[in-house]
Length: 53
Picture (cartoon, rainbow, N blue to C red):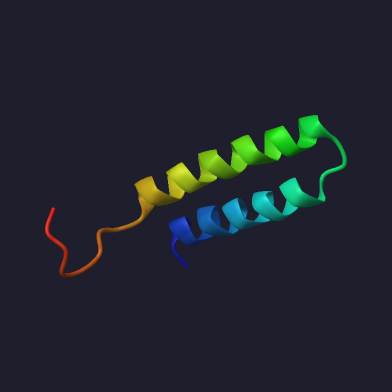
């Protein structure tokens, strides 16, 4: 498994936890974490074959 799969799973987990959170602060923190993991996923993903830079 590649590292970007882990970041992708963490993004999904934070989105689920954001909707399951009890208070606004927890929702906000999970939303920020989900965005951070999504950006990290995009940054660590290898280039797709057949696409030009």
